[in-house]
Image (cartoon, rainbow, N blue to C red):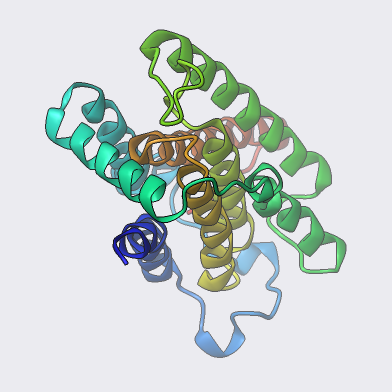
Length: 246
């Protein structure tokens, strides 16, 4: 089935790329990955790595791909090809699962803390970071939707680029990575899997092009990384010490 191949590629390809990068960044011993470690022995790379070139490769690539599609006939053809397969194979399909799934990664961050699996930040800290990420991404996504004026695949409105649902989902996924990735890369994988599921459903629902969700993923990750960096600067100034992220 052509659509099945396209859908699997849409979800699995970025997920594998993200999980591979995060897995390679983990320095914890495999035997004790799920055992809580005091903050002073958690993996803490140097401050310059908050927004290092390496950490920006994936979100930068995703965003670049999205913008390139706006002017590339070849990439637009890829968008249309996937849209046509969706229409042919599951015409009339619609679900609202993605309306709720977009919040699953963020909810998981709070749920894990609630059941005793502590992340890097307490409630107030992670809520401030979430608020900053949400505000930054909302401003950027809204500006791009109005500025690019892209028609949705279903022909309903001219605000397709980028995908707001996917941006929201990847904010939560990146928070999961930052808060719990030091414990085990599988926390990061779980967050990105839920976010990728949201992206795939936006395409299946015929609400977004492939380039919309890829750009949305990059924006969600980038604004969250920036928010962690900004919060760390404020926290360092307030406490006079550094709490670093990977």
